[in-house]
Length: 483
Image 1 (cartoon, rainbow, N blue to C red):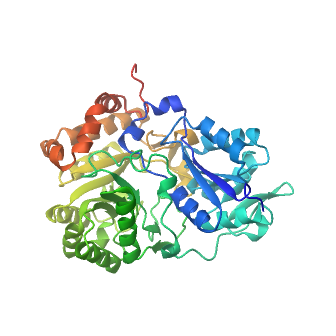
Image 2: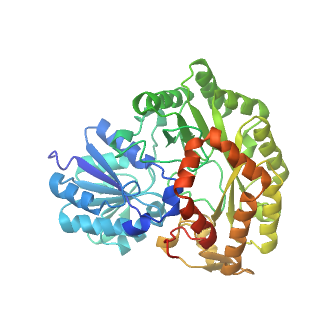
Image 3: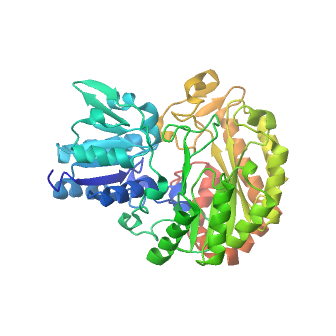
């Protein structure tokens, strides 16, 4: 195989116009590196395949960069990792690549295409292959085959004499400790080009890290199409070495573990914390947990090891509604665990959803009352969106009104409207929920304390104050100055 054919460009599409990116409040508040692509790039490089990354979120004006790259280096494959909202833009880029260099093959991966599989190739001519599930091995085998013999590669959707075929799910998954660290160095401007959410970190530079894949639970609203029912995690030793690498190579001082269940394996967390205490890296970290998998002794250990903030899913303060969508819907237990985190000296971030099937104004009022009764330091309220691959998606039209507009499915709009309430009322209650939180004395004092606990967050907030103010009043992700 020629050297150019053993070269891959990996692209993280933006999902909307570069002009809109300047006014995108989501980019200003949180810009996360594409860790999945960085992991695939590192795996390919380890196997002798040259790989580069273009992240359109970090550099929205990337169309010319992509075209110039394929014309000059003529990679055998261009891979796109897409969410539902960025898939259409990814397809636009794929067509652009094929127009520039027609022989280039395009590969799509991520939750959206893993859920829809054959439908993607049936309806979108710019897509040559879909990788279903995790991408490292399937991508390596595909590139090494030159695109021939796809039928022998598990986890692929491809065209075969005009017929779309899926080769089935991969039977053997990688040992996560066998993976090289993600190729952070291939992300232009890393780490300074990326930002964790405002007030969610004490120090800079900082970044995100993933130490597990999958989730052992089956909530109605979660997309399970990539990792399905599997759940794997890195060892404590690998995790510590990963953090040490980020500190030594890039000067990282704070990590956000972007895992669904960081504390599911208690022994792993205990070993990791002991390594952090015995051989201090001078780093802090955030993580997300389920309430069932923490206790006060573990929390105290995590605090001593550098845990700065814990996020956990509350979803709703209406226990009857919660029981319809997740297991162990015990709001009393959840409240006790939130108080426990606070007592351990760790910041608490609550994760909530508004607009789930069965939602009503009464259930939203219960959520407000519940959250405001607890020592929650920060919270994120998303607008429920039924993604392909989630259990609710298959029957969502029976449960309310759903506008399936992929480009708008970013959890920043009410595209699903439960029966018995209107979109206008949901928007009004959404703004009320946020305003009530940020005008609480406890919340305001907490953010004042961030002046010395997270000074960089305040610098970012002041620099983009008018963008945040417009978002608070317009309730839209992208708000132009004249709106």
